[in-house]
Image 1 (tube, rainbow, N blue to C red):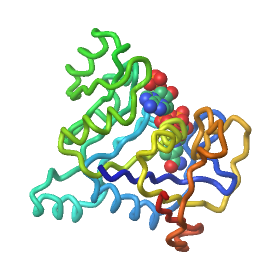
Image 2: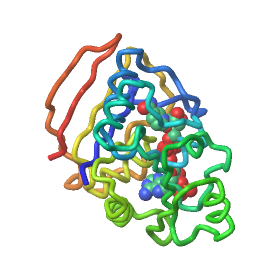
Image 3: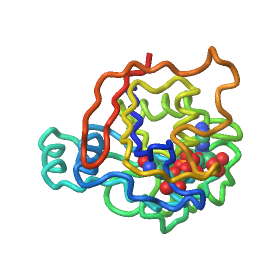
Image 4: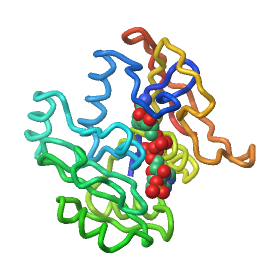
Length: 222
Ligand SMILES: NC(=O)c1ccc[n+]([C@@H]2O[C@H](COP(=O)([O-])OP(=O)(O)OC[C@H]3O[C@@H](n4cnc5c(N)ncnc54)[C@H](OP(=O)(O)O)[C@@H]3O)[C@@H](O)[C@H]2O)c1
């Protein structure tokens, strides 16, 4: 499976405010760039923290891109994936609405009643991991489900885990021209951090593009 992580950060590397409130970091040209990455993906993934904070739909904005996918024999929209160990996704979350498939990846610790609630809300459930969802096992199960290209949109906890698990092939970061600040504001990669310098992820800078009022940095993961 090919995994592409994309996120928008402030110059100080924050994804949102310390209250975890969404911030408009980029502009319309960047939204269009993100829509194109979504359109190429078989599925778009977030952690449950992003679902609870932002209630994203994770759908395509462009009808042209939906048509292009249909003509290629693909579903008009990519599937949505939520990494949600204990099945906390609200039944009325926007990520569960609409025609696109939604896969909630839970761990074996998730209560059967919550799994059933999410199935009743239309979700497909994948089980991976004992306490927290285990990413290598989850991506293997998603690949079995026909997902060859996965886009991860955040937040910082899930992105860190994805790098720590060594499953990321490509990273694009939009750096907006603002400072958000706050030692507790989510950053591009949170989690516990790499405990050993040898474990740091090395990136190869591929491109720098000026877009809206910021820059897009594109990296391959070495
Ligand atoms: N600027 C951007 O591009 C952008 C994009 C997305 C989000 N955001 C912002 O990011 C913030 C949310 O970020 P976040 O870091 O709190 O949330 P997150 O990464 O979306 O979700 C974190 C949660 O995902 C669950 N999870 C399940 N499996 C996991 C795994 N293997 N590794 C890590 N987490 C796993 C964990 O909860 P369980 O243990 O209960 O499973 C964890 O607490 C919001 O403020 C949002 O606005 C910004």
